[in-house]
Image (tube, rainbow, N blue to C red; front, side):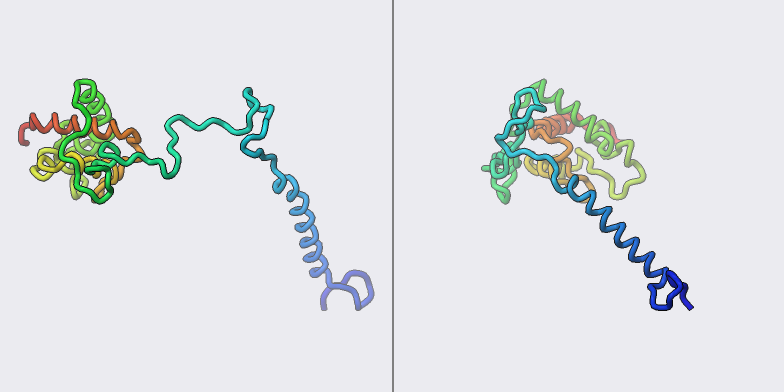
Length: 194
């Protein structure tokens, strides 16, 4: 027979009283948090705020912020003729190749590409050779040598096969073109066969 509260038989069982007590406690506990979490301080865009030195609640945009719908679509940003997403690839680098551009390309290449493609571009980088299969592309492979620069830009930006897309890593499109210019310089002096 269940234990009851009090001595009379018509009273509530103890286990049911404990359950109801817990439910009441939980309801009171969540109600206490509701106001602090529900009514958080917030500001409208042009409202004033003493917290910031300029007195404005709305903060200035971060440098290089691009609004939706205002994305640059040209040959430099897409690697395609006229900037069309389904257009033909540009055949040559749209940037003027200068010693500074090549130096920047070499720097970015060593940071982002050399670990897989190797410092000379032969596809034998320290992170993947000899364990990766398939191996990263060698820049001296005739398919890569004959590929238009816009195609290489697309591969760097969006990835291909097991290659990760580097658009989010190399956010400056001029840096991607600088890497391609450096790749083309490497192709002029292929390393000795091993």
